[in-house]
Image (cartoon, rainbow, N blue to C red; front, side):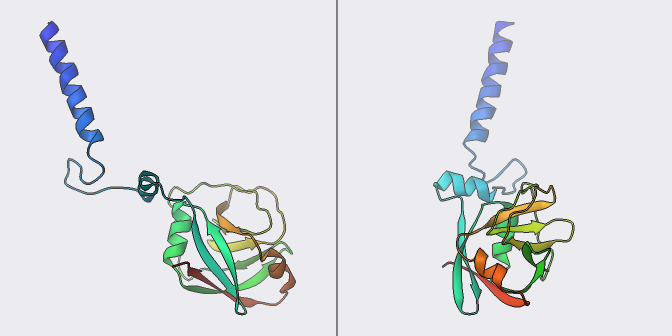
Length: 165
């Protein structure tokens, strides 16, 4: 009986160690599977991405988080959108295609400079004024400077997002 227990424990430990040493390069079905978060963490990279938002030849740095939604937003770049005012609080624009949100955190209380996706409509919303918490907002990132400029533009205007390379 002791031999059977010992072999069972040895077998389980052996399987656990094999899976731990796998590094995501393959699995038992022969496929490959790693998440971008695992890559960022394992390489010790910064968990944010920097892009630029350009309006009328003025560029503003934007820091995006490492959510799946933000990474998929970056994949759309370079991207030019037409922003219009909504509720004297934010500038909004439809995206050229639906943004895949993945397992990005839902719910956010925006402050000036926050860039979000409003999930029910799938549109981009950049806040220039604080607003109430909403379960339907997905936070993508933040503009450090430029929120005041957004508020002062009362007409529709174009904005271009580009990746910092």
